Image 1 (tube, rainbow, N blue to C red):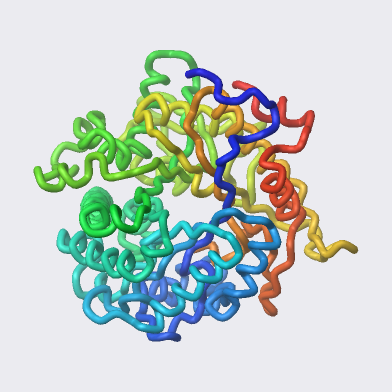
Image 2: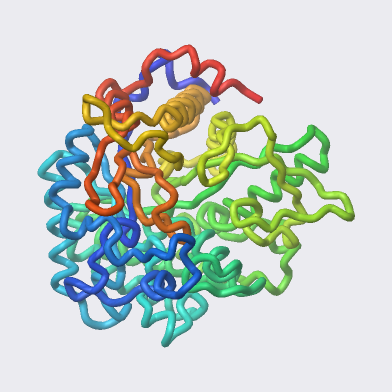
Length: 484
């Protein structure tokens, strides 16, 4: 791939700079404005499911503070904001009646963003499924949910598509399937070796139908784009052996290829079909027709890297949630980390060169015209949560993380990767799913009791990056993004 950059510091002039959140993690107001219950409302209220014993009932109270939060984004100079609609806030039962209050809330948010020159990027589903669909219809295990999701998407396109021009159907369907239906650590809390593949299949079918609805009824007149956002960590071969290189490819295909191959190639990866047999559903002809080519961009969430190798006969395979995600047996891959790698509070390895390699792998395998990193960031505890004289909390490790990963992104663009934008996770500390509020990813700290937003140094640093459309000169970058 030919280099696209000459300047060692600047990004392309049309590069999209943003930050991201999701509805359940920040909105709160769980019983207000006509909102129905979600699977996460039920899951968080189940004793023992959330490490801190918290719920998302209030979260960051964004529902009542949206104008202050948008002003905070504008103060950073954000060009784009990625957020999600809560399906049960718009359609409380997951089908049927639409909540006028829900429509009004999101319309007010969108208008506020546009008034401040911030482009909204909307995710239709970020894991908070209407509880009624799970209890009465088996959630993502029921094939009919594809039509229900398309109907919900239709409502959103109709009410907001005049102002929203960037749509994401699903956020990280891998997580919905594996952690919700395989390991049981996310809502709806089911444990199975079969259900993850069924849920994933129906998530893909739902995506295909939603995109078909948009392209058939709205895209030409509204002029927007639509796609999916998948998560993937890089898998580096432990050695240069044929076996380890094959193991790394297998791990990537079970992770990202599981969802990206159907979108770009019309079928699941061959290794999945071979290893899983009849546990892996097959696409009907009409589903394949709707799914293949059903994305206008490649959305990627990326956080970490691990080494992959072919295990020895007596090796214990990693079934950790953040390793193979509980399907190690299906992959026959062993994952390990370098003891010298720095770790975030989540335990995720900080490996910037893995980001560069993953972007190159995506470009080579799928050749997308545009890639957007929809999430990238790090959770770190505050050494001192008190702001300094300038009102800012120091967080040097997060600043270093962002600088190093953006440096890797810059190098990937120079390699010829069609990376068009970057969204930092997250705008502010939030309810981090099964971890509660214990894990802090925010550019802004959210005080536990008052919910006051306090900028961290990373927020100011990122604002400078956005303002200059480039990275500050830093001798640390050369080391941080060097090839392995």
